[in-house]
Length: 210
Ligand code: SF4
Ligand code: SF4
Image 1 (cartoon, rainbow, N blue to C red):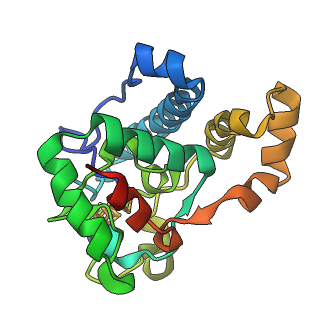
Image 2: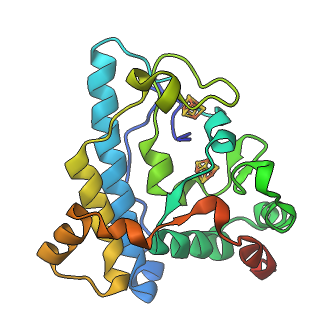
């Protein structure tokens, strides 16, 4: 599900994406980019730690079975905004055209609507859930969810880093106080805001692509 990989340790050192003009105009994009950078850094550190113990990340560029297999991928409102922003304003025209076709014709059993020919078309804006799912040793077999078949091969994200990344998503819900954010995440209230990526009517996004 996470296909940023591809170098020696299969996971390049993360960098925070930066879109100064868009970040200023939207008011929420900075928080989303901070969230993703926080999550990616945390995952990167954990993967390095595991690889020092001799474990090898199986996730790699082009590996995408998980994107077809997983049917419950939580996505938060700010993440949905991010996907809309990215697809409508940043995606290259030829990719927009291909994605429009995919979103308009997507059927329930087709896997993630953003997976096209083994590539994630919204890779820089893929949700936290996708970033957090990483598997060691052997790539997932078709239809396999290693969380159930070999839990020990699935990376467990650091809870505190994960919560920090989630807390960044709350400003659009008028939750700005640090303590309030922390509590909203700690108590699990944040999860009531999530939708299942597969159940969102992405056809609406497809229709907006010109
Ligand atoms: S190893 Fe599994 S989780 Fe990792 S990218 Fe491949 S299919 Fe996805
Ligand atoms: S958004 Fe879809 S295609 Fe992209 S990484 Fe997540 S599940 Fe895979």
